[in-house]
Image 1 (cartoon, rainbow, N blue to C red):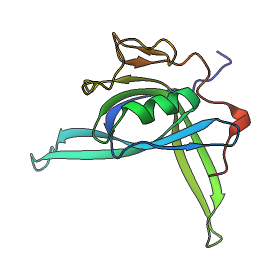
Image 2: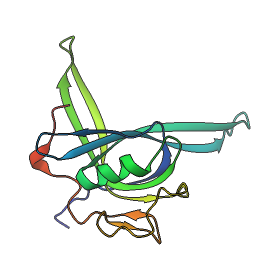
Image 3: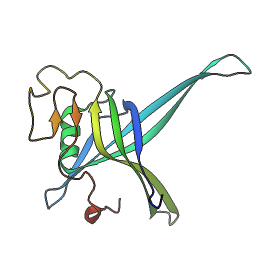
Length: 148
């Protein structure tokens, strides 16, 4: 096989409400932290251990707007996307590294709140039967990569 694959699948809970930013050209970017927690028994002590990993989720354009409109802190969501890492120089002059999950598809796993989820919404790419968001446009546009 000559190709490679960069694909991430996560199921977790939002750590805070979705932040959204609009650019002058009308494009949108949304960000939110997603927590995934694993639980296991320590074989030496017998204690139950829980470990939470935090993931920085990024959604763009239509998917960003849908996430901002329908997702809230604590909601459970299934995310498919890819890992992207960025390098930047901090205010102190030191290099910093930041890893994000660029979402391409989501499924809401928390039941919708009353009067919040539309009965049908073909414009946005929501499948109301499954609460799945799969926008027709690509979720990631390399021409709009951001330096932050």
